[in-house]
Image (tube, rainbow, N blue to C red):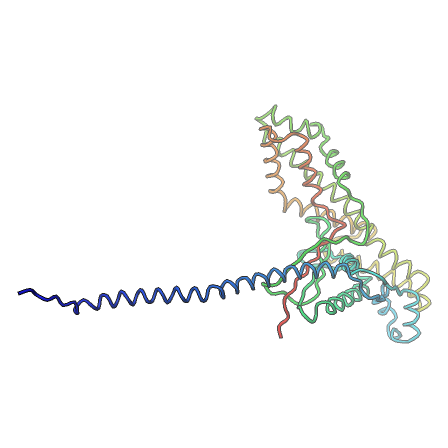
Length: 392
């Protein structure tokens, strides 16, 4: 008798396999349905990000080239108000102050105004603390920043929150410069654009001048750059000493560049401001306030002296000369402290490449000049615009 097979007991295995296949089919269908949406979201986000970044770039260009409304300010206005005392709110005094010390700015681009604000802030940094040197034109900088904020609000306020900064550090490691910031603190996901702007004065410090300084400092008893580096090939046993001499000559070049740049910088920026304030004071303030001219000049000199002496600097000669000498000294000390390892590493690399004929002496000289020249940025500041979509 033939036995009839019964498959019922094995049906659960087939059922499980079918369930798995059905699950995989459903997943595949879901993926097919959702994939365009997922891809679309990524594409939309990418387009939004790209458009926002492009928008921030366009906005910065537009803002920098736009015209700022005219505004007025008063040279040494805050100091004059202090000297005037109780009469500084009288209509006669206000009219006279505007006539004698009032100034107006018209037809200026935002770039011009931002650069002038950075130049006018002029800070010297002692032990991490910034002390404002251009105290005579605080009325001017306040007017500048009000005009800048009104301009930015008008162009960005409805759609974007913003922060705009202007940073001016004219000489690397020399503790002078300025930082201007307008707007709110930026979140981490904001769009950032930067550009260089030209400062509102002309301090002529070209590369050719640095070349002359470098050549002069390498013209020692050991010869010039060519002969100094030639010793590396001819006297390999004294390489350490030769590299130390080269390092010192580079620092001498940097120090000489700092000395000359500081003199030019102070003479071109701080000097004219003080001169204008003193010229404005002489013979004019007396008509507003009795002995006003004498008090103003005394206040100018006294404030500069206090700034110096508060940092342990003894003023033995003119305030201006003391100011220059102190900046030069601090700048050279900071350069040596911060850049010592960097310059030594540069000299070692240049020595290796020259000895192994990877670089010619002309290329070595160009590298040294570039290193020294890169530390000077007197006539440029960096402006950064950060924007993000306004919520609510």
